Amino acid sequence: MTANEFYGPELAQMRLAERQVLEAVEELQRVWKAQGRQSPVLYTSSRIKSPESMCRKLAQRGQPQTRQAALTRVRDAVGVRVICGFQDDVYQVARWLEDQAAFSVLETKDYISYPKENGYRSYHLILGLRAGPGRGMTVEVQLRTIAIDFWASLEHQLKYKRQVPHARLVREELRRCADEIASVDLSMETIRELLAGSF
Amino acid sequence: MRLLLAEDERSLARALTVLLRKNNYEVDAVYDGEEAMAYLGSGNYDGAILDIMMPKRDGIDVLCQLRRQGNRLPVLLLTAKSEVDDKVLGLDSGANDYLTKPFASQELLARIRAMTREQTVQATSRLQVGNITLDRATFELSSPTGRLRLANKEFQMLELLMCNPRNLISTERFLEKIWGYDNEAEINVVWVYISYLRKKLAALHGNIQIKARRNAGYYLEEAI
Figure (tube, chains in turn red, blue):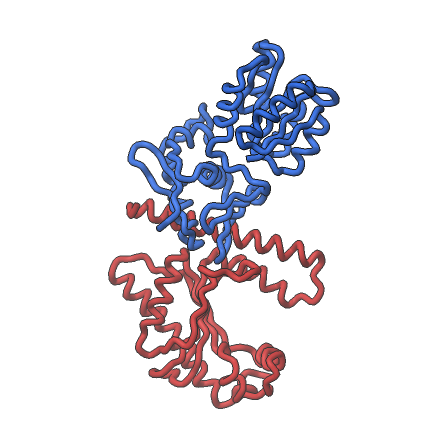
């Protein structure tokens, strides 16, 4: 099934919502550049959740596998990811998005300050678009550092593997790597502050 | 405070046990090196007094195995000979101090106090101050909200601070102990590492802080 078939007439509005959030991030980059500051954003990516993945999620939650449920029972049909260099930048971008008049913050989850048991560290924002082209839509934004993004791309594979050899060991080692990466992220941030002379 | 006394002369062992108990120490007395190693394996001691000349395994042997296992328990060696070689071998094997027999009981007590002073030796490999735990086996720094893995030198610095809470540790001491005497590391490396640790303690919502005393050094304090 294509996204068009599944989401039908709503798809256009979803794409507008996706675009609107990406543009809010681009606006931040313009503002910072105009102020002569280095952009806190390294790159962004976005997606409309595939019908297969959406149906799997709806089924898991005991929801009907319909367009209606996809847009009201699940809040990540539209997803935007923002990758930053440093943890501090992640919080700056999050503040910027939270302060946008067109967005209302429906939920925040700070897995950077409060990491998940498996080591996962990201900042999640659920935005309700109350004005602008994507009005009425909900968008999930995930913000994280590039080092943790690298980690997450490998951890992600674990979720879709049915049989993982030495699963416990692999999970423990991934967690250890996340704890090391987060530690290095903080060291890098310290060195950046040292270079900026803000000690 | 719990001490292990390993001394094969029964009468001396008895006298020392009475003396130490009178001075409010918990004492377990054993009479050979093998027994000493078995008792120390429980990890329940704050210090050990080992006679060098013992049956089965001598005091140096026990000490060496202890240190090989990464155990930093304060150890005082008792030696019947006042030979320099014995003292050097004992100290180089990781003893904190030594005493030559015969000795005055006052001196023994003073040396035990000195070697156990401010040493927060715990039964497990974990050090805890405030809401922060440092695992010496895994280098993991954790709090109720999360955890991080420290790099080798960061770990050693925090270990030193956490073993001596509220005690000032000089910048030179960090440099000597962690980077080594001969190293050409510049002195600024110490405050760079202190900065890493401060950032990491803050990220974990730690209620302990590394404070600086100008031109002197650093100490660990529980935040108010």
